[in-house]
Length: 106
Image (cartoon, rainbow, N blue to C red; front, side):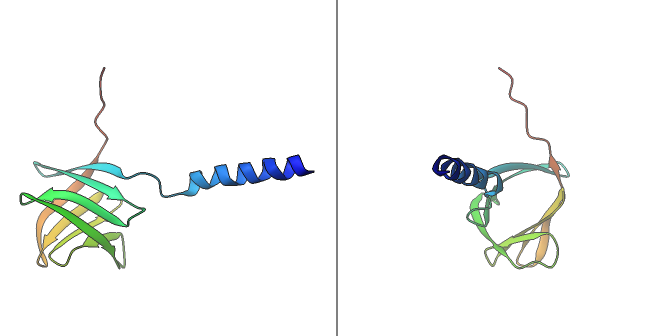
């Protein structure tokens, strides 16, 4: 009985990894002719990107639909495979489409 409890506990704890938030993901968008790379960190509820020559860290905020990250000046919105970026409430990068991850060849 004791062995079964230990095995059950190990399976339960191992299964927690399946539902965790995991490591940050690097997402590649194509916004017209502009490439945009975003590092999404679900554990920290934030995204990081370089825009206007600045490294930005935007925290997740309330959104009625999709996911919204902002620092008060810049806002990154995404829903499904689409995204756009605002600066001071005005769209500056539009029509972004999520691209497949680049394939590394050896």
